[in-house]
Length: 230
Picture 1 (cartoon, rainbow, N blue to C red):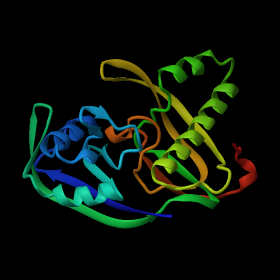
Picture 2 (cartoon, rainbow, N blue to C red):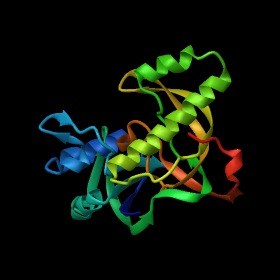
Picture 3 (cartoon, helix red, strand yellow):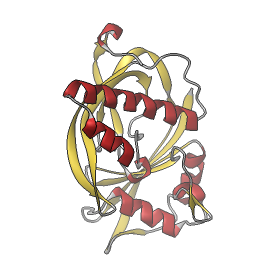
Picture 4 (cartoon, rainbow, N blue to C red):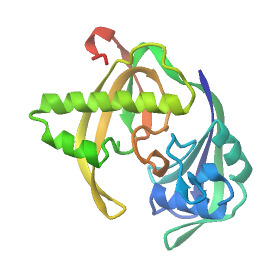
C-alpha cells in the first residue's frame, strides 16, 4: 500500500537546542484543536500509531504527518513565525516541505534499516522479562519478536493487513536514558526485514516524541535464508 506523507523541517537563525518532546509540546499547545497533533481526546490518550510524529534529527526539528496527519500538518505548518522549545524561542526563517506517496508493507526483498533515533522497544513489563532471560541468545530472540510485533501493530493502525510472515533480525546495543524522570532502556543500531518503511517513521514506543525513527540503508540485497522468521 501507499502512505501519504507530509514532512516538515525547520531552520532558524541559530542552532536548535531541545528535544522532540518539546517540539511536540509546542505544536500541541499552539494548535490544541487538532487531536492528531497531540494524541489526546477529552484528556484521554489515544493508543494508536501516531499519524503526526516529531523528531530532532541532527539538531533539526522535523514533523511528519501520515495520511490524515498529513492533511492536518498542511493546515498548520506555516501558521507561526517562531517556536518555543523549553525556555528558548527560535525565529523560523525557512521551512522545508516534502509531500510524497510512499510504499509501505511486506516486500519480496530484505531491506536494511538503521535507527536514526533510539528505539524504545520495551515497556516496564517487557523490561523485566528481558532482564530475566538467561543469555544473549534469548534476549536477541526477544528483541526480534518485539520488532515483529512493532511492525504488526504499526500495520494494524495504518489499516494494512500483512499478507504473509514477517522475516527480520536485529543488531542493537543498549543505551540508558531518562524519559519523564524515569530511567528507561533504549537501543541503537539497526535491523533487517522483508518490509518497506518510509524514512523517519518511528517503530516501538513514544514514536510521536521522536523515538525509533528509521532510515533505510542502501545495502546490497540480503538473502532470505539469512534472516529469522516469526
